[in-house]
Image (cartoon, rainbow, N blue to C red):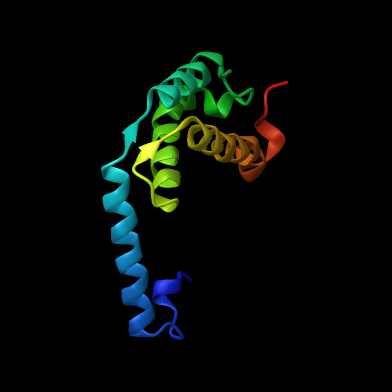
Length: 113
């Protein structure tokens, strides 16, 4: 059950959460890339290898978009509007951790060897 739908969550808490989410959303839309962030993004994009699990073959075409979303959210959560290389690397780490667990989440039986 989500926090916003919990009966224990007061209207005041719900409104505070909505306000914070709106703030983060507006911050993430105003993010700008620094040249160092562009360089790191390019390196990550060029060096990334497809996931070995055949169920995720088409994921490769969407990974860069997921990375962009992650680093925008990381930047907003840090209350910044300039994306730097540290934030890009952090976002890539989060994404890589999620990717590592994707096969396990669906069950390893279909994994290509």
